[in-house]
Image (cartoon, rainbow, N blue to C red; front, side, top):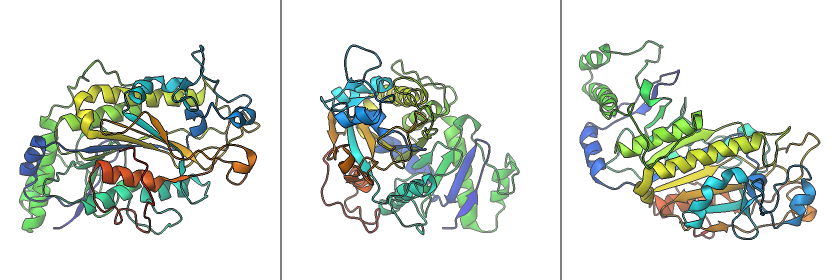
Length: 409
């Protein structure tokens, strides 16, 4: 099968490593008839402050280290942490997620992160998306390796989609994946920048190479099929209201693709601006606003998908956490350990997983950060095995074998 790269800038479509099989339309119909498990990954780029996102309100050292930034212990105030288990609590702006925790559909892994101690955003994001901490030479992403390890005949061109302007590292590799900025602006632009409109089909119809002709034809059919779903006239179900933000729009479009039954299996969305060195704020402020957007977006997605959430898992991640102590600018500097959230019908929730290392000076990583007690690859591997059903995760996470499972899915 010949691969062809077609890129669209400015919020359209990027078809990457295009290699659709000739029967893709038939497979798409088949996919609509079968229940498909879906993984939605959310990357919080910039290193979210996990200690203020999932608050260790039972840890005395937390309040000592953060005289102005600490979230108050649970109580009557709307600015206090939302208690989860008597020790951990949600930031008050994450309150929309509390019902999922109570319903045991949301799990949290704290003190989670990379065994590599870099505090470089670029390196840490790369290590997390390739799932090879400390190795800069890895060419493919962990989600793409999963797609390759779990190839199946029911795969469609929409099996893996990033709602982003460009394909993230996690989805780069041998297997086809799409980057869609806006479904409403769905189209194809050639590598030279010229829009391929009505001439697209005729150009490929005239192609001398019959394999390339089939590939081009199926790309055109894929676009027509998605347009025929009339996704531009979409109304979220169950009273769901997505935030009017790029993140909220991305999650809404993921819900559209799931409901359109186009064969979506892996979706990727990202939320930025989590790097708060100055005036981070506590219950109100910059961090609170970002968490509000995150919570309202995820809550709307779960509400919108309704019963379909029985086959969906949402996984959040960020490259590293923040230092335990606030800095002199009432912000937080780059740290180490962090928190991840897992939400969905198959999740064994209502629990904060992982071993808590404590925040006392002698318990911190390098004397300043939350220590990592759970390798982030353990979380990824458990989702890939327990939710997506891949029996052997070693090809997805080279050089890594989880010594035990956390048990959240």
